[in-house]
Length: 102
Image (cartoon, one colour):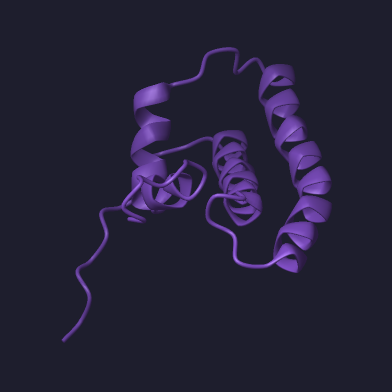
């Protein structure tokens, strides 16, 4: 059985795509650091070390957008891209889990 086909990504500028990619990298790292979800310190340490570089890349993506005159964020379009790229699940690892451990 084949997995369901994902909807296509919305049309993004190269800078918007870079922003989404860098943002999700940062979210993934923060999720690995989250002490409410972590199991070992080493993974969190490695993620924290990588976070510096990924946060700089995120900053650079936003700076590129700004320099190119992309001064507005098209939140609905970018949210759609985040959903297609599993952003809701990935961002969920950043939160504190409910008391039942879910």
